[in-house]
Image (cartoon, rainbow, N blue to C red; front, side, top):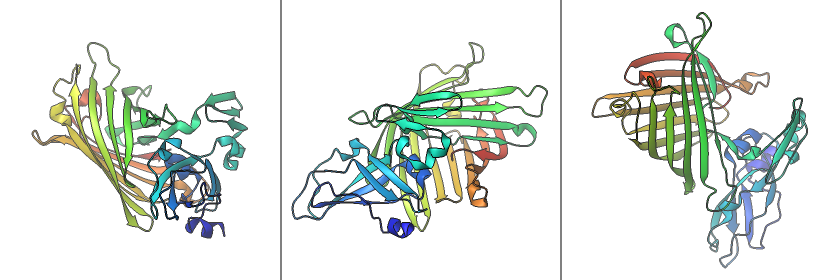
Length: 350
């Protein structure tokens, strides 16, 4: 019964105004709602335009039958009046963890708009948990021969909850190359990538971001590679029907400032790239990232393939993950050398 109600996009909520009716596009499950947020369409069924008056909270049901409580992201409700017979799209997120029964087995949780807290065996941890999101894939993989192991952790954070600064994001990604299988198993290289960017939605299926990114190997005067770039990128989503979607994300960037040992990095990295991903909801995902310089014919491509292990049974909340790289610059100190590697492992995000 719950799943049927979800598929009919019914929100268990009282309309904010007599002529405005909210309809929820239910997520597949709570994890998807926490990661991507939830779209809510506010439909004007009256004869006159009406200012946006959205409910602060909405209760609905995910397609897997999980009951969800959603909170309005106020910045998405700051728009013009809804025309008669028209609609506007709002964005909601999961309500504070204290009200979400699905985390009851993780310890006592309480929170509000400014701060949440989680009590675990090590004590109380406080933070703005609902403002963290996955960014690039977080994984651990290993390969044969010189491929060795590769670890990556990545997240983004929204410093401002609402207002004109709400679209600002701060992100951090760290990639580690680990020579497992050798004496002492040393860390052979590390890449640190802090970013800050401004991201806005345009229409129902496009996002555009303008930002700054710093790439560093953490080296000293003799072996430092430090890249600074400004970029602009856009992601266009295509709904292919059924459970499938395609995302295309071109990016253009320019380097500035000192580059350490990589003074001619643009010959190998170029000034732009593209990411394309094909996703089956709760199923397989294939993604490829490519960059290069057409003038020199040099560049690189990285392929990711993943599948949720929970689909195989046992309730394990990880992904089976594969990664393949070919081209220049997988490691910053090797920006002008070709590497070809294939690795397999698991990931937390994809």
